[in-house]
View 1: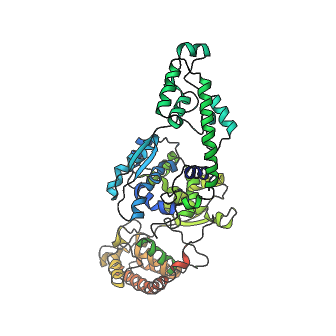
View 2: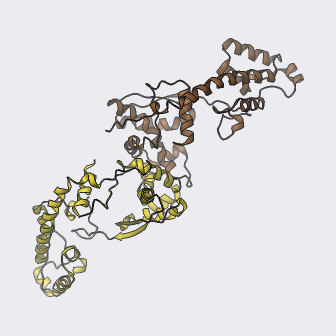
View 3: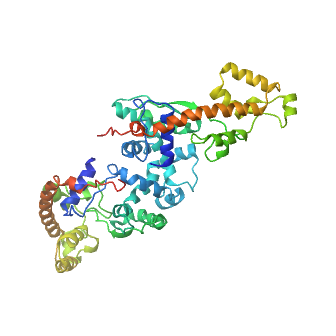
Length: 248
Length: 248
């Protein structure tokens, strides 16, 4: 198993998913199940449609052109498992939306329900603007980061504060453009704490160092528990993997 | 298993292939083995290369675009089975040549030998011009045709003969443009017989009916034995299928 695949699986398990209700599909491992679906989907998607949606270039490799049909296949897998048309709801980041759009276009022709979607927003980068991305490690906290790394990353984070303490006291900060505030308000503060924090920031009564210190403490606390659960997850991987072949 | 797949397998076995030396790969059945190779091949083939070679249109489906990488995968399978770079020789009809050409372009970059090819000519149609094709059943003798069907197809065949017996006696026929002669000379007559037949045809000493009668007799003889072997083959299918997964 690829390292990224394995790491993602540990994260999913550590988040608390129930093995009885969860089946993790790995394209390379479960291709025997996915491929017949891939063929049925691929022959209903024209190159011109896929190009209009995904913007292939002449230099794109042919695997990229075929990939949307692999990505779409799990939408119909529950129907094969249940042996009747079965509705699916896909929680995914919003950039994955085009895959489900084109899948919806062909679903009913294939005798399945259209897949439904829950769009997730991106988690912002700790750096100026942008989404958190594994290609820029300084802007992202990984579930495998040690406490010292977490501390360093948060302490170097971009904030919505002023360039100096004096200016911050005088003018106040801008929590709306501050990733540190975003993290605290989305992951740790409750609604009332969060409102008070933003008020104190805007009125110059809170310095960025204090928020960073709060976020560091909270993140380390979360991560110490998460790391424990992630270690335990190593013994549970098999019970989460999709093993059945609905065509047997 | 698809009917076409099953029928093709019976034909291969009936032709006398040795099960100890033969492994039949079915894309849908062996995709678990082929898919990792597909991915490695697909990412090395650009859309512009594949389009230049296979001439995709905007209406081509995305499965067709990815397919050359599936077709190429078995070229490298022997290397995985033998666990060292292993040469392959592909006997295939000449229209399959572009698949092996693009595979040769990437083989060495992937650490394999370039696949080598034996080009097979097409068997001509029994009708005027063209290759034998399953989409025009009247021009093709199938391995499942009964004796009466064979007789009818050959009796309706196009020949290199003249429109009337009189003209044939006077002007002679043209064996070079005659599918009946082609079949007799490639499959049944030995070299000397074949030369005599062409001479008698060209000099007006042989009528098309006689050649058709010869071909019908020979074909029925071959087919009665082939049908017997094809029936026996039904018990041998499993011993020809590729079962191993070299990645285990």
